[in-house]
Structure formats: structure tokens, C-alpha cells
Amino acid sequence: MDHHSFYLPNTGMDSGEDAPPDKDNAPAERDKRRRARTLREFGTLSIPEAKSNIHAMVIVGQIEGHVVLPNQNKTTKYEHILPQLVALEQHPDIEGVLIILNTVGGDVEAGLAMAEMISSISKPTVSLVLGGGHSIGVPIAVSCSRSFIAETASMTIHPIRITGQILTVPQTFEYLEKMQDRVVRFVVKHSRITNERFRELMFRTGELARDIGTVLIGREAVECGLIDEVGGIGPALQSLQRLIEEARAGREAPLQ
Amino acid sequence: MILYTVAQLEIVLAEPGPGTPKFHEMLVGDVPVLVQETGAGRGRIDRVLSTDPNHFLRPELSPGTQVAFEA
Image 1 (cartoon, chains in turn red, green):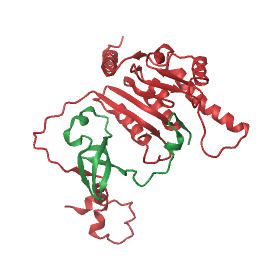
Image 2 (cartoon, rainbow over the protein chains, first blue to last red; image 1 turned 90 degrees about the vertical axis):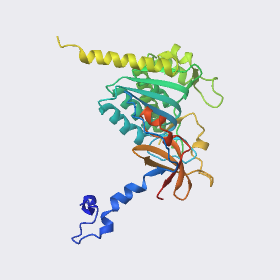
Image 3 (cartoon, rainbow over the protein chains, first blue to last red; image 1 turned 90 degrees about the horizontal axis):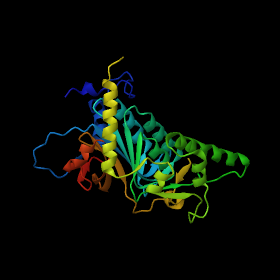
């Protein structure tokens, strides 16, 4: 094997001396460390893989941002989702993206980053809320071209809280208000709900045991204009296929 | 960091106990997966991190499959 094919000039080895041959393999060794092989061998013929023009992105658990959450949390990380969205936008064979949500919410910045990315993708996107799409999951759910919610799924709309040490000064309140406005503005812009209605749901008292806010279940999310339709995977995929066909027809239309 | 979540923050931010599993992101073939460590250099696939639906149909990538990796 040609050791020099692994040589990288900017890895601290260009001190003027020839690096020992095993050091030349360092990048390959590093790469190998991150690879796993399955322990069971499958005695089956490899079947040619069918290519799908739709890719699915599953956003589950806590949405993780700048801080790594402790291991007991199941998380979806923005460093996975954001580059994957770039790849989906760029890939010529992928015509549509299905976003599946079952999240308890999470980091505001990470959630808004994902929502902004999804809303600005040029390809058709459809979201499906299953189980729950709470808190910062709400802007992600409404960011798609069309949104669906399962009949039993729920979405909790409540105010943002601050954790840790806080200064009890008016500026803290103003800062929270600003953070909340970012979420409210995004949701109002990307769904049929009005600013007044969304804020009314957010600050309603007497609905939640430990908090103020509202839980919307299935149809209620559609009735208040947050989500477009009640449905499961079948209707969501049909809707995505329809949007893909419309996009194709738009591309193929002759210039007049 | 502002967490906007319905999960109880005491649980989300709790210190992980001794039994908390360790996870590693890895590639099996070309597919990114999340592997739960079960011993030195051994683990089981917890989650497929790909967006390609076909990757989820591959038997060798199904969750629970034992994998070996260089620790």
C-alpha cells in the first residue's frame, strides 16, 4: 500500500523530518476507529437496492443544541440534521422530504435552526406529528410545505422558561419575551394560526397541571390552524407525492 | 442554552448514573448508526442515523445487531 496516499501536509508532521511510516497511517487508523462491522454474517444474496426519491428525517426525543445533554436523554442533534438537510437539498435524485416528529422539545436555537432550514428547502416537505410534537417541536412541524398530525398525537404550547441562575431584573423578562417572539413569529408565518390565538393558547391557565399553556390533541391542532390535516403515514406520503408531481410539472412547463 | 421542552428539567439535566449506557456514532459500511457499547470493542446498533428509508430495510443494520469496533 502506498503510505504516502495518507500523508496530510497540515497534520503537524511537516517538521522537516520524514515521519515514521506508521504515523503515515494515522488518518486511516482514526477513520477505522469510527467504523464498526456487524458480527453476524448474512448468507443472503445482495439484492439491488431500490432507490427512493423520498427521504425521511426522524426527529425524536430532546432536540440537542450547543450543549450535550446527559446520556439518559434520547436526542436528535442539530449537527446531524442540518448537514443532512443540505445533502437532501443538493441531491438530484431526492425529490421530497418527510419529517417525522415525536419530540418533547429542546434547545430553542437548535429547533429554530432546523425549522428555518426545512422551511427554506426548495423541495417539497411534509411533516407528520406522531405521539408528540411539543414546545420547540411546534415550529418544526409547521415549517414544512404541508403538515399532518395523527389523531392521538398531542402538541403542547407553553411559555419559554429559563433554567439555572437568573438575574431578577426587567432585562431578563425582556430577553425571555424576545426568545418567545422568535418562536411565535415563526409559527404564525408558517401556519394559518393568528398571533393572538397562538399567544392565547400559550398563556392559558387551568389546562396544564404544572404549567400555563394548552395541549392540542389531533384535530384540535388542525381546527386552530396550526396543522393542515389529521392523518397518518399514508395520507402524508400521498400528499408529498402530489407536491412532488406539482414541482415536476412546474419544472417541465415550457417558458412562455 | 434555553430548553423549550415539556420534559421535566430535573430529569433532562440529571447527572447520569453508573448504569447509564454509553453511545458512539459509527459507520457500518457507509451508513451512519448509533451504537450502544456493551463491552470493550463491542456494542449493539441502537439507531440508524441515515435519512434513506432503504437503509432501514437492511437486516444487518436492524437495531439490536451486535457489532465489533476498535475501542
